[in-house]
Amino acid sequence: MELERIAVRAMIVYVILLGLIRVSGKRTLAQATPFDFVLTLILGDLIDDALWAEVPLARFVVAVVALTVTHVLVAWASSRSEALDRLIEGESTAVMEDGDPLRAGRRRERMSEKALACEVRHAGIDHEDWPEVRAAHVECSGTVSVLRHEWARPAQKKDAARITR
Amino acid sequence: MDPHELLMTALRALGVYVLMLVVIRVLGKRTVGNFSAFDLLVALMLGEMVDEIIYGDVSIVQGVVAIGVVAALQYGNEWLSYWDHGFDAILEGTPSVVVRNGVFDEKGMRAERMNAKEVMAQLRVLGVDDIREVKQAMVENDGVVSVLKEDWAQAVRKADLAPERGRDAR
Image: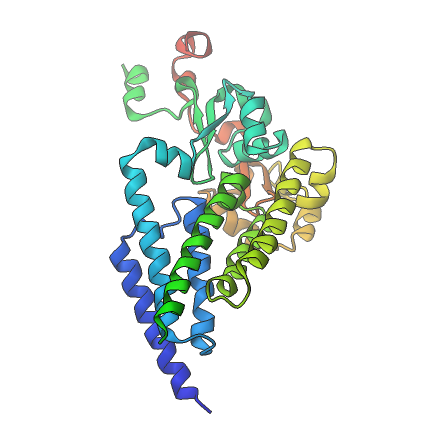
């Protein structure tokens, strides 16, 4: 039995990953983009082979360091170049404007009108109230943002002045 | 440790990085950003396949084929649900209404195996304490509960305070 070795390897792997994530910065694996999420899965996937000693620790270290360094370099480069950023992260896609679904944007995101209706409901807006929506976008993170027209936004304290006046 | 093998590991990791980046870009932001149940599974599958490639347990070609097939299936699935000809209901399910007009909807709750406590917990997450405020709450295909409030329970809109400056003056 080599239980104690497995325990030791688990500790080493834990410390290595913790160190890498701290060094590479919070945003790296903050899952800000879909790719960040998949990269997190890949890193997690690499661990088990090292834990069960199916690969030597040295190769595990090389693999995770290579991935993390590549990711940091790519993030750094795309923060410098807008063209590269577009290539890697894509742009947000408008899928609704003034309450009307946009076909071109929906096609690009392969988003059915039902799926769009679902996203707008998440913003608390029923189908009959779609005219309240000024714009809805699929953002780079994959989430959908819904913006209301000024008149349809919740009243703010400054608006109260109009009635107390 | 064989330095050549270490170098190969690093190069394969680099290759996998580029491959996955391309796959994610082709599949689109929503695939992995905004999960329906199956999207999450696809992301897990893709993430779970790559360790053998990086460590050289399978050849790069085998890895590319496996990842390519899963990605292609997912891509086809996306178009099927976009066209909205009934396949989406089979592949992604349909939303279940759990509260209607301020009252629990037993049928939808049974479909989602949710009890009243769980529904109330989901409503609280969205800041709703009183179920009477809810015109309709449903479990959407992405597993998240959406809440539409009764008209009287909605936040006061700017247009409600100054109707003359409302819709027409936007």
